[in-house]
Length: 374
Ligand code: SF4
Ligand code: SF4
Image 1 (cartoon, protein in one colour):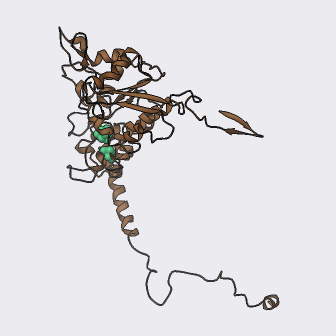
Image 2 (cartoon, rainbow, N blue to C red):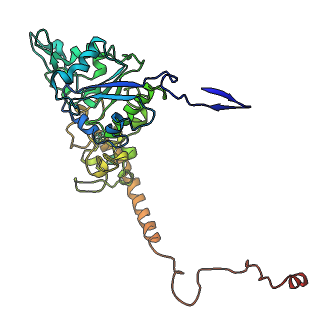
Image 3 (cartoon, rainbow, N blue to C red):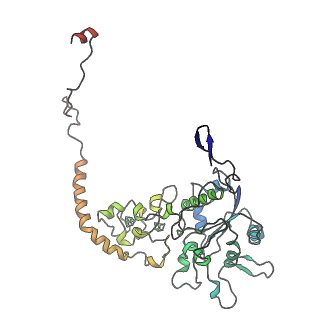
C-alpha cells in the first residue's frame, strides 16, 4: 500500500492478515495414503530452515497460525480423532485448508469388481474403506491450495513405473494439469524421492505467506515445480563439475572425480541437492559420491534405468570433451606447480630483495623555517 508521508511517498506494510486480505489461521491436511512409503513426511522433519516445529509453533513471523494434520506427526492416537478434521473438510465444515498429498494416485477405474488399491479411513455407514480417490474428489475442489509432496505424488514415481499393476499416476494426471484451487493456485509440485527437506519447507512457507496475503503466488515452471529450486540442473550445482570439464572421469564409485561414466544423470536433471546438501548443507548425491538417478524428474525411474549404466548422452559428450579436457588439465597442472611456490624474496637474509623502491618517500619535516628555506 502506498501512502503520502509529507512530500514523499512511503511504503507502509499492512499490519494484520485482514488488511492484507489473507488468513490468520489455516489447516494443513496431509494425506500420505497415496502409493507411498511416507519417506517425504520423514524427510520433511529434517528441515531446519524453517523446521516444521517452527511453523506449527508460530515461530516464523507473518505466517498464519498453522494446524497440521499428518498421521506420523499427529498428537491424536489415530482412528476417528485423527480423521475428524479430514471428514469435516470433506463436508465443507473446515476451511481454509491446504491439502498435501504424498504418494501416487492409483487408478480405481481399472479394478474389476470390488477392491481398493489404497484407503484412508472407513465409511461410517457401510464400514467399507474410503479410497484416496474418494478423498481427492471431495477435498481438492474445496482446498485453498494443493501441494504434491514427492515424485510419486507429483508425477507418479516408482509406483507408476512400467509394469505396475495399479495404473498409478501423479496428482496433476488425476486432477488435470489445468486444475486451480480455491485460492486460484495450480497444484504446487515439490518432487524428489524423497523431497529435500528444505525444498519442501521453503515451498510450504511461500504458500503460507501467500495465504497470509503478504507474498505473491510461488513461481512455478511448466511441470508446476518451484522455479527457484528446480530451475537449474544437478550438474550446474555439482562440485565435481570441474572434473567433468577437465575430462577426468571416475572409473568406480570410490573416486572423488566426476561420475558421469558410472551412471550419473546430473547434466540433464533439474534438482538443487548437490548445491544445497541434504541436511544443513551436509550430504547430497553426486557431490558426495552417489550417482544422480534423476529422482526428481517426471520420467523417473524408467527413463534413468538401469541406474548404474552410463547415460547414453554421456558417451558422446564425454568423448567430445576428452581432447580439450586433457590439454587443459595438463596446462593447469603446470600453472598449479608454478603457483605452488613462494616468491624468492621471502627470506630471512639481511638484504631486502623484494624490489622495494624508496624514491617516493617524503622528506622528513625538521622545522617550519627549514622548510621555508628549502
Ligand atoms: S558427478 Fe554428475 S553432476 Fe557431478 S559433475 Fe559429474 S556428471 Fe555432473
Ligand atoms: S541429485 Fe539426483 S538423485 Fe539426488 S535428489 Fe537430486 S535428482 Fe535425486
